Length: 138
Image 1 (cartoon, helix red, strand yellow):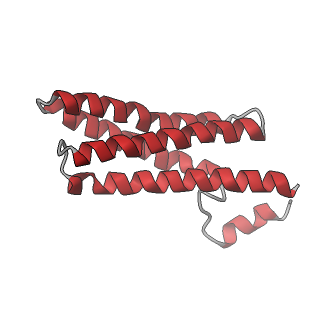
Image 2: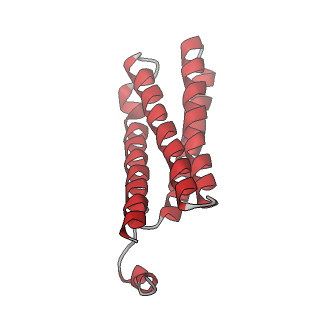
């Protein structure tokens, strides 16, 4: 257990290995969600406004729950809060899919954000699985 911290500098670590490293990407993701929401607010499309608001709430909640998880009172609390972040990321994926398929935003313009959403879901899932596995290994 003590030797693990000495190995961190030998290779590039990933968010799956070090959960705190997901904080910055989730914050950047929330900033991009704000930009999309602002774009949708400039358009005269009521459905876009509503979907944009739903997406903004879910997307900004991802990072907020990751922040909360960092202060988890126990391993189970950490996993629970990351589970909420995972659900919010999946909800974000849904709203982006609706925005794209409805034609409110061109699919090509949303593709980078959709890809980033998939990456966040994957990373959060991996952190949860790794944390659960480490708990079982002890």
